Amino acid sequence: MKKRLVIQGRLSDAQQAELSDLFEVDVLPQATALDATENRALLAEAHGIIGSGLAITPQLLDAAPNLKVIATISVGYDNIPVDELTKRGIMLCNTPDVLTETTADTGFALIMAAARRVVELAEWIKADKWQASIGPALFGSDVHGKTLGMVGFGRIGQAVARRGALGFGMQLLYSNASPKPDLESELGAQRRELNELLAEADFVCVTVPLTAETERLIGAQEFALMKPSGIFINIARGKVVDESALIDALENGVIQAAGLDVFEQEPLRAASPLTKMPNVVALPHIGSATHETRDAMAQRAVDNIRLALQGERPISLVNEETYQ
Image (cartoon, rainbow, N blue to C red; front, side, top):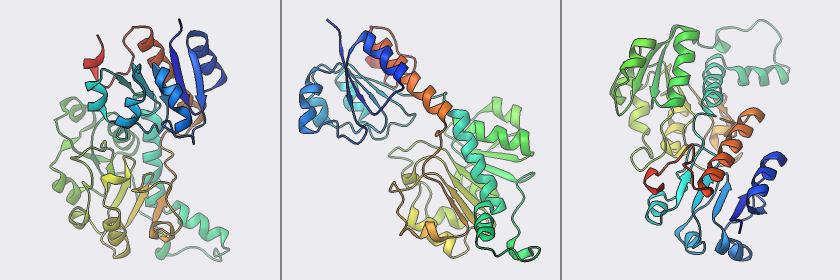
């Protein structure tokens, strides 16, 4: 008898057909709560769940006694209780690697846009304010040759750093739990304690995962250490930053500007002060949002859940101890 699979959100027709050939498939709209009353019967029979933005709770797991694997179409899984899954012998798969370069593109786009005031000046033109050559009041900051400080130096952090060092001749600093001697040799990167990095860098780019240790890692004290000309970039998770402290730092000239793809509460509401600041470039969490990358992420999740339900090791397994 075929195993049963719940899909939340839409895969491509080809991806859905691939899974339907192998498993009994139930498709739920993205906006539907997995553990809604009307879905309890599906969960009770499900051996696998695949989707993005999955809200997994112990109560949902109680309702899914046959569950063997969850495949999230994302790298991050801070909304999923990994320890609880592991305790129950449920595999968790994610999608690293396939979105690294695209997310790094987004990070560097924010560096460029914030430094050169791209969004602010584009809106200035649309408002018909370009009546003569611009003066120093509208000048931006150079990126080439400056110092880029990476808070977190995993796959995405390294990809951003390569763009800075190899493409723009930037000096690299990184704050990370462990030294990266190969990258120090390749890129000339230098390891610093966080406070030292903040004080030395012209651009501070955050790429750490959200954990209990990194929540609100950057707050008022950290912003106070940055240069007044410093530019802050966040492509990690919104809750890594104390957003009210960031707003204060931007409003009071503690730092020059910010480029943000993530926020404490998403979607970011128009009432947020961040939406009204000319020195803020705010994006709607588009780090991996290209057609090519989102399709590749979905395919990685499809491959992960297919392999897991066929008794093979998934490509990207978070909790290794669940694979027997």
